[in-house]
Image (cartoon, rainbow over all chains, first blue to last red; front, side):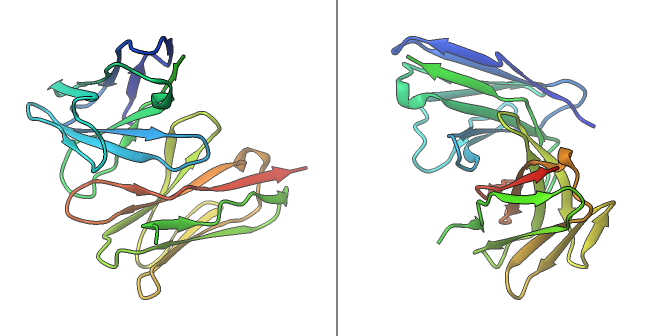
Length: 116
Length: 110
């Protein structure tokens, strides 16, 4: 099956710093990548959808200036949490698909962010 | 009403038991449906898609009832390794965005 990697797998940072998370599709070209956030005992919540070469589409309530997404190539998307605060501590998961409707999404292993 | 609702459980069952989970969705225009499995502190992994006619994959059977807007997952002959959280996932249509339920936790015990 398709493989998606994320880096780093976990990060601890001080409040006010910015954190960049990378999502890579290793053996396929991902036209579309998705960024999710999951708090403990809650469902995955879609934050934004990014298409290669265009601006990301953010879900309602997600600040685009807070969560910067760049999808510069067909195999790489990055999420930058700017000026992170303790309430941003969460499990961030990306997924990738080859595009089109009802395509399977392949999930990365997730990044656990802890902001002190 | 949540877009996708599941009983959070946990369902504690003995090894070998049959267990069933249900899930309801609110958007009648939803087009595709899935069950994912998520182990503790890991990413979700696709278990199976759910087709209108119902489908089976080994010990797992998924069914869809569009009229009542619910999806079910049946696990037969439960194994210890089946212990996980099972996520009901719906594509509400108009693209390939997915909406996740909060998951049903299954614990299979000796």
